Length: 61
Image (cartoon, rainbow, N blue to C red; front, side):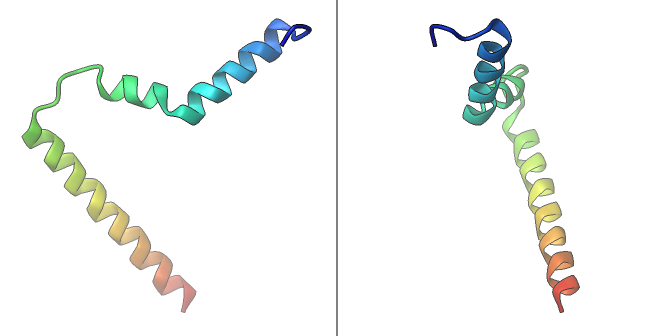
């Protein structure tokens, strides 16, 4: 944008980076995680997701 201030340009850039998921990808790939550890983390996240969904379902009733 030709008449854009530095602050608004930086704000727009940060929004685009957040929307694209670039920072989360960088954080995830910062260190090497073995496959066994990755599977353990994924299973833990899945259990947490299921518990949240079950809790939400019981609250709706």
